[in-house]
Length: 146
Image (cartoon, rainbow, N blue to C red; front, side):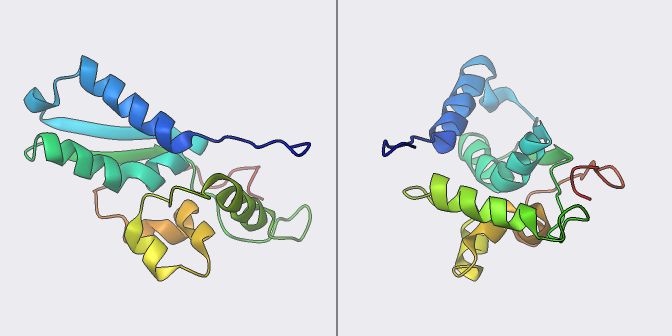
């Protein structure tokens, strides 16, 4: 912005939060770990759940890990307001801006979508790559989507 660099640290923030959780919750003694978020946090759940499951299983392989995204499944479809695929355009810009150094967490998705890496930050495209059990809590529609 204004010829000054922008620093986006979502990757570092995620790992800092996980380490904070680990400092409070002895994962070695845990039997269930739920990854949850709402709206943008729901999208983060889709994006991070497999990586977090691998991290948890690295500490305690017996833990059952589940994802519970509460919304965040925004459809890749033209807006009824503008007629444009605004969400796709915005997510593409976010991936370009925010992931210049650190790739998105789901390597399988990234491998299959090298020409469209922004698909790996869109639940509609990402969900088929998620291996961790998830329960999708989504309203029938969201006014923001339509």
